[in-house]
Image (cartoon, rainbow, N blue to C red):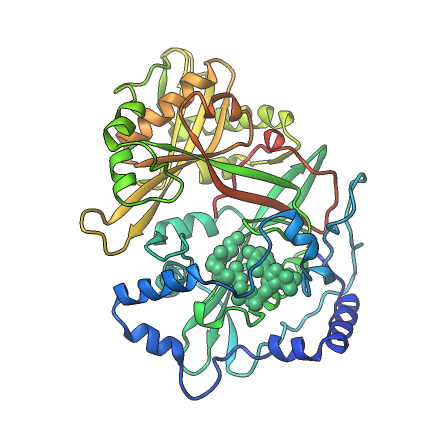
Length: 458
Ligand SMILES: CC(C)(COP(=O)(O)OP(=O)(O)OC[C@H]1O[C@@H](n2cnc3c(N)ncnc32)[C@H](O)[C@@H]1OP(=O)(O)O)[C@@H](O)C(=O)NCCC(=O)NCCS
C-alpha cells in the first residue's frame, strides 16, 4: 500500500490546480450555516425520519457512485485516479506492484480541517463502545433505513484485534469541541496469495464516515492517512472490498441468500428475500432436515487448530486469491465464539484425530426498526469451507441445519470457491448485491469468483 510522498504532493497540487473548487470542498467538512438540518432531522421521531429517508431515496437525484463498470467508465475519480491502482480501461496481463518502493515515508499525519483531530482508538477503553455507536448509526444496511447492522463489541474486537494488529491502524477522527467520533478506518495484517505470489498486506476494514459529514471528501483523507501508517511498517499492498465500482475490481462476486426462517424474513421485508410466493409455500420450500448427515461432524475445538491449518493450506493452491493463515490466525479467525463464529470439523473416527473437513460461518445481527413483530434478524455468513472426505453439498446442507439450530434466520454465501456447486441445489437465491475485491498497489489479471478462496468479514 504505497504512494510516494513526492508523487502524492505532485498529484495533490495538480489536482488542486485543476479543481480549486474541489480542494476547497475536501478541506471543509463541517456542516455549514447557522442552522443544522441534521439536528432538525434528529429531533424528529424515528418513524418520521424513516418516512423522510424513504421519500428521499425514491426521489434520489443526488450524486451516486458507480455500481457497474459501464457507469464507472463515465465517472471521474478525483481521488482514485491519483492512486496506484489499475486503470479501468486497460486489461492487465502483468503481475507486480504499481508504484515502486520509496525509502522515505511521510512522518507527519495528513492534516485535517480545523476542528478535527486524529485519534487511535484504544479498543480496551470506552472507545470500543463509541466505535459501535458510530457504525451502528451510520453503517446502514438498506436504503430506506428500516434495517440496520448491529455491530457488537465482541465482533469489533474479533475483526480488528487479530494476531499482529497495531493500535495505530485503528484510525479514528474526532470533533475537537465535543470529542465525538465521526470517522473511522482500520487495517489488519494479512498475508495474501495472489496467483503464485505470497504478499504481506493489510486488509482494510470498516471505513465509515458519519452521515452528517458525507460527500465532503473525508474518505480520501482517511485512506491516505491509513496508507501512510501502513507504509511506515514497510507494507506496500492492501486489499479491500466495496459494493461500488472503483478502479479496478480484481474480482466481482455475487451474494446468495438461503432463507432459514422464511416467515420472519418475509414479514420483516428483509432485503434479498423473494416475496413472490406465499408464506406457507416458502416455509415448505425451505424446509430442512432436523439433524446433520455427515458422519463425524462436530464443533471445532482448540485441538483441531493445527489440522485445520494444514487443510486450509493445502486447499489454498486451488485458488488465485486467498489468505495464507498462520496457525495463530486459524485460532483467531476460526475457533468458535459465542454468537459470532461457528466452525465445525469432520473427524472420521473417534480413535483417529484426522480432520478431513471444516466449515465456518459467522453471525451478524441486524436490527429491524419499528416493526410490530420482529426486532432482529440473525444472518449466518459462510466464511470458509474445505473438505477432502465428504460430499460438499451434503456438508453445506449440514451447515444450513446447524445455522438454523443456532437460531439464524438466513444464510448468506458468495459465489466464491466451489460454492456454485451447491448454491442453487440448496435453494439459495441470487441477490442483486455484489461485492468487488480490490488490491492496492498491485496489478494482475482479473480473477473469476470460483478462484477466490476467502470471504472478507466486513
Ligand atoms: C463509504 C463512505 C465512507 C464514503 O463517504 P462519502 O462521504 O460518500 O465520500 P467522500 O466525499 O468522503 O469521498 C468520496 C471519495 O471516496 C471514494 N469512496 C467512497 N466510498 C468508498 C469506499 N467504500 N471505498 C473506497 N473509496 C470510496 C469515492 O469514490 C470518492 O473518490 P473519487 O473522487 O475518486 O470517486 C460513507 O458513505 C459511509 O460511511 N458509508 C457507510 C459505511 C460503508 O458503506 N463503508 C464502506 C464499506 S466497504
